[in-house]
Amino acid sequence: MKYQNLYTPYTKKKTMANSNTLSLSTFTIIVLVLQLNFFSSNAEAAGVKGGYWYYDSGLDASAIDSSYFTHLFCAFADLDSNTNKITLPSSTFSTFTQTVQKKNPAVKTLLSIGGGGGPTLASKFSTMAKQNSSRKTFIDSSIQVARANNFHGLDLDWEYPNSNTDKTNLGFLLNEWRAAIKQEARISGKTQLLLSGAVSGSNQISPLQYYPAQAITNNMDWINVMVYDLFIPDGYRNSTQPPAPLYNPTGIFSGSEGINVSWINQLKVPPNKLAIGLPFYGYAWTLVNANVHGLFAGANGAGSIPSGGSTPVYRDIRSFINNGAQTVYNSTYVTNYCYSGTTWVGYDDTQSVSSKVSYAKSIGLIGYFAWQVGGDDNNWTLSKTASSIWGP
Image 1: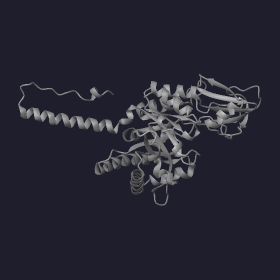
Image 2: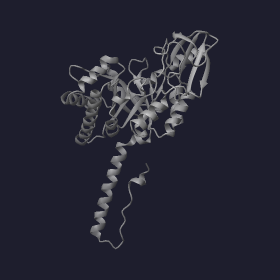
Image 3: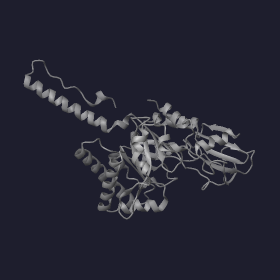
Image 4: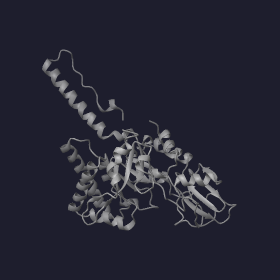
């Protein structure tokens, strides 16, 4: 939305009395201040070039090239099920913002809470969200920890709400969290903390019906839609698959289905509240026949590459390719794959990343995010590609 669309200048005749002119000036200043506050709290409208950093990924925070990002998520803080307070797993969290801003002073940081901890972690969130008192403890703790460690925002990674009760309680949590963030900013005089979240990207992963879409729209600056892990060896042992296709002519599960069909058209969350996920890793299958190596080729379950195992990050996949693996880009599904002997790997490379970021721009998404930056190669190839395609 352009600036001039938000404010139509209020003009008066030159013969107006001085007192009225003073009143007009005061009115104009107030309006301008309100506009500045609006744009300050909605700065993410310019775009989100996001990336998660996982503290145990092997990549030091000081090694992140933050110049390719507008937002970095520090993952993961935990939820103490006894106290409902936030705990940090490493002392590196306290210096994360200072560290990544050395290369990019403008980058914003968010403390990500939760992660893929399975049913045990999901149960912690479910229990915390059930009561007003425990929600308040969680919220107050999250704000305190974020401020104490110089983060610009908070990111909820509840994987996953899985009942109507969870849906209702998550809605309460988001309403109360936003209210608390606003109140804290008023009292402290600081800029409001950002509030984002990582959410399921498909019913293939976790039912989207258990997300409170209206509460998300009303209270969150944006959400990171995890449109990856759609087809993996654990569930599709007998044939190779595109792990994170943007399109899928043979089935409903894809990035575009998760974003456009599910989150935008069905759940009615505005495009400018959504960021598309980019996986900086892939999945390996074992081919039945080394000479039959396309998409949906016969497979005998998971495979493994020398460096990276069955779920190699992009850096390890590039090493596999440099050692002789053949590469293919499929524009129909928007996916890359490579193969050598009976080992086959589906992943995202520069072609698929470029197409996904272009897609995000074309439908008005707020941006993109990567899981996770430690998987990129030493030249930051995927991060650089995504940033360049999105533009300034």
